[in-house]
Amino acid sequence: MTTGFDRLEREFAYNAWANLETLKSAQAVVRLPARAGAVLAHIAAAEWLWLRRLGQSAPSLDVWPPLTPDECASQFRDLSRAWQTCLAKLGPESLATEICYTNTKGEGWSNSVADVLTHVVLHSSYHRGQIATFLRESGATPAYTDYIECVRRGHLIGHGPN
Image 1 (tube, rainbow, N blue to C red):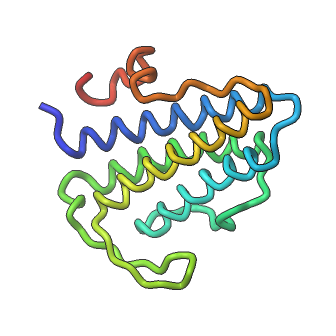
Image 2 (cartoon, rainbow, N blue to C red):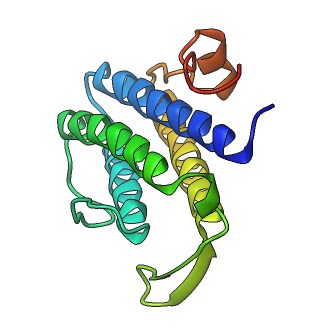
């Protein structure tokens, strides 16, 4: 039986795979649309921001940093390891814990760790969809990053029940 925590571990493994697939499709474009590059960098920066809010060591980047695709590649590799470490430190018992933080508008909020983790995966997925649209509009073929594709291709082996 898959627990909520097992599910989150699988979702973060998927998220890491999908970020790298999106990056590869962006790097394959001769002339990357500026907005696609900006959103790609935003995904990395936002994930680091949420790691910091969860009390993890993470670089402090602007929410919309001027990263190149090659810089994003390094960020995504580091993020994959950082999320694995974070999840290992948190454990299932931490999911209901409330964290307090200030958002980028200066507003104070409190959310459960489970809700924050779910948000991170969904936020990145939302923006990968935007990147796919920008690439398609420029005549390029975006990566196929659906969750089921990740599962079909065996990228989640070793990340909980299949």
